[in-house]
Image 1: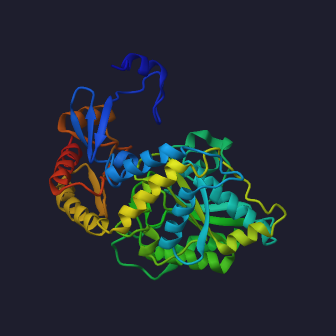
Image 2: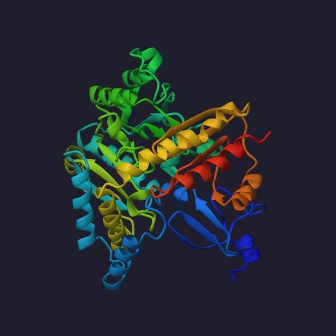
Image 3: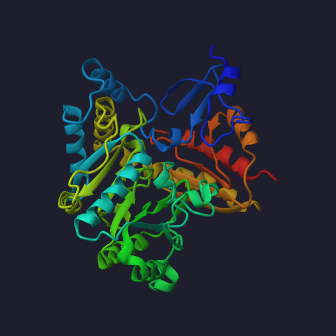
Length: 427
């Protein structure tokens, strides 16, 4: 058996201290919605392993696709070479996305996909003759990854990267969209959040290359569900002021919000789109940055016509094969029944938490359930309860949430909700 004492002394975990890293569970296998620990304990993976295992773990068709690809071509550099899985995935993606959003750059993680999108935007503005457009704008409360440029777009005060201070480049921020997803839209820019966007563009637009935002759902920055009309308004303002719109669908893409892509709730098409996480069904890390033809042509017209990025594992055949199999499952349409069912189960199961004094809000959208508390949770206590109750949750700060695989049953969701409500009721 692996030595946990050695692990504790030498391995860093996400957002953890080497001096006091906190407890970890030793997982030996996973299948469907279940994680099995080394001692035989089983836990429902209510997080889809950070939102990526949409079809559950080790789906047989995903495993078969990767195994078959492993037999012939595990990896080859994408510089000057290509392969069938990369082309097949591009065909599937362009078939799913709006017309014209079809110039695809593969990378190996969501953060890198965001970095590539920002490079695309700045190079495209340069190609259009706007050399001064180098700044990026975004909304507060967002999260776009942990790499250097991406983290500069996370909330500068409440975000997890705020302690880097002046080392992080200052970007332009507007307030978080204030109107909730299911609230009535207010057609007043001073109250619906569009006024500050237009004010920024009017004052600083000549220096702004792009506006980046997570459509409808702000994920790790606060699990906030915003009104789709705000996104539609931002699209119109970007067009008016010559700012490119980047949508970060790394967490929301491929059915999680009840639409195949969250941007569909607003009827909006971006200039650049970032995808990742569930694209491979959680089999491995992979991402894509997809630009419009106009953006690609503007880059080609610039002083440096090549897009200046090239990851070693770009277009990895194993990841492409897994993604093709994952998109085939989505194309069969089971998620169109599964996600609304999960949403209904979550709404019913989490509703009792509204009665607790320590709960600020309960919100559900698609296969996402959130209990927002007034005070941060005791993570060590949560960790122990997860093992005892057989439900794996990973809250952050005041946010207790779940994003289960689409294949969960009503009983699975009831169990998840019971544990979340129990934790939310702690004094």
